[in-house]
Amino acid sequence: MKQSSAAAPAAPVDAAHRPLPWWQVAGYGAGDAANNVAFTTTTMFLLVYYTDVAGISAAAAGTLLLVVRIFDAFADVFAGRVVDGARVTRWGKFRPFILFGSVPLLILAFLCFHVPAIGQSGMLIYAYLTYAALGLAYSLVNIPYGSMAAAMTQTGSDRAKLGAARVVGATLVGAGLGTFVSPLLKTGADLQGIFTTVLLVLMVIGFVLYLVCFATARERVQRPVARVSMRDSLRAVGQNKPLLLLMASSLLFLSAFLALNTVQLYYIRDVLRSPALFPVLSLAQLVLTFVFVALMPMLVRRLGKKRLYLIFGGFVVLGGLIIWLTPSSVPALGFTGLVVATLGTLGNNVVVFALEADTVEYGEWKTGVRSEGSIYAVFSFTRKCGQAIGGGIAGWGLSLGGYVAGSATQSDQALGGIQTSAGLVPAVLALLAVLVMLAYPLTEKVHGGLVEEIRIRRETGRIPVVLEQELERETHSRPDRQTPPDEPAR
Image (cartoon, rainbow, N blue to C red; front, side, top):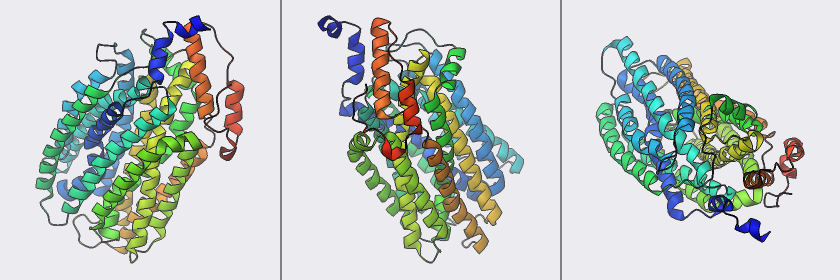
């Protein structure tokens, strides 16, 4: 036993389980803040820009968001193959993508908000091309960024910290946009000038944040050095039951989130008629985010990531129903629904990436192939499809309700369309996401056993006792009957 514990091959595994220093966690979060300079800015404001500045119809803009985001989903798969085929350099496997892909991404985000006045057809072609190019550039940065979490640590609590750091970074950007940008987008304001100034500032901020992420992140998990073939990657994904269930649930959840997030500005401005609530919502997001950062590691240890995912999904259902049922004459209650739904989406975004990172180990245990890039890519593929569906729903909901761009007042039918898109649709989709996730089998106990078996296999070449029966028990057990997550694996 002494010789085994002192053997050289154990060192990389020990490194992967050492606690992450705070500066690496914070630096990783800076990377998602940089990502959201492009992502959150477009999800929050691009539909408004297309309808109220460029003059593109709401229906055409909704279709554009659907089509381009589906293209983005396939771009993620392409990016995953590029990442898995990349060599491990002195900077690691994933960090070079962040460094060299950041500038094209930020430039394309700027161009998306500068549609030239060249007729409806010309403007649509320009909008499709620039937004599609932005999606491809985003994939080539975000896929390696997201894949890097599984390469930084194999400890569940540290993966939860990385997920929390992502949410902090994204929320700070969203809060900044909600506090400083959303109140400026009033009817009659020089919206093009506002967007030009905002995007120039965000490009500088985003590039600095990418540099911070590149300088601080470290890849510590041992991996095979051989390149992974497309066939092996597809096999690893196809046999990864936890990943497939997480993908299906995330497709539904992201559809809910994007429908709510895209219509949120219209809901506060046109339904509640309370633009002053923009900074209040941003402050609420900030407070909730930092509460999650403080509590999430403890919540993961006590409840487990799967149960937390289900709880947060329930918050989105409740918040969506409040939004849908609340009359516009009671803005305080409608705003409460927004906060409750925001609580659910923030919490989900913390645990979902930690869950995805766990499926990397399941895939390696099941097939012998470790392919962070392909697994994160197909996971992101379904999330992009969800974003496409949610964005399409938002545009179509506005169009079906008869939304009139630039009008200070909207018809009751238009207001009803906004409430349905922001409330009922997210509630139904989040409920379906929760129902799918009930079958997810990869609890903390099972994941710990997988990691241990992978370690033994690498060190000895021996295939340990498989965990199929344990996985089956977890699949068919009720969430409230799960084994406590801190119980050691057998």
